[in-house]
Image (cartoon, rainbow, N blue to C red; front, side, top):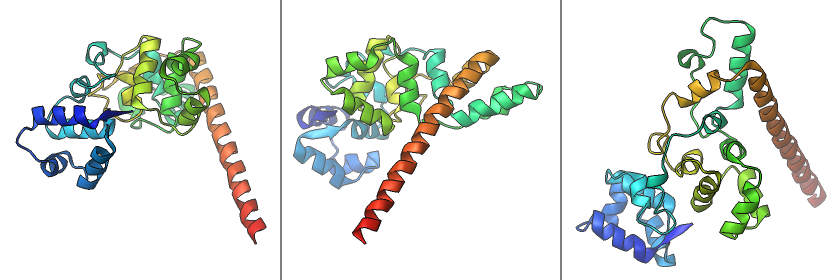
Length: 244
């Protein structure tokens, strides 16, 4: 989703009335040609809005609320659920905790010892959707946004999700409206209200059996991705061989 150029120009005139487009781009750290192209098309991307807000020291969530489709996001920001927090832990860190527990290491799983990898990780978006899914999330998303389910699946497979769809998913699931913007990498965890030690705390609170099942599910997803990549690679090789 993008905001209209008219809405963007109005917002820009409010936050930086004396600055030119070149000034705004310099402050935000974006290319002037990028913003110019978006203005010509009449649509300015959400990541551009976030970059400009950061450049001018404005809270990105509050800045997005100025635009259609995001007005309720600031009021809808709250602490993420434990399921959401755990969804943003990579399979490597999950396996590391399992090994530590199996070896009965002292303080196994403490924040210091885990040293969790940053997120978003490779499967952040899909893992988050599965963590918040009440059972019919994809169907409701397709109905509310008008995006075909196959297109939603394609976005999840690619590890991305349009900002407006991420926010709508959070609305449907009843979780923090900023969570989807965090797991897609649009907002930082701090900007989205995610606690610094939240992931480690939620992961360490999981019983051994639940941790094993979580590792199984993550490895299953990873296995399917590797298998798909191998098949695609095989098709590419076959095509080049046929071309001679």
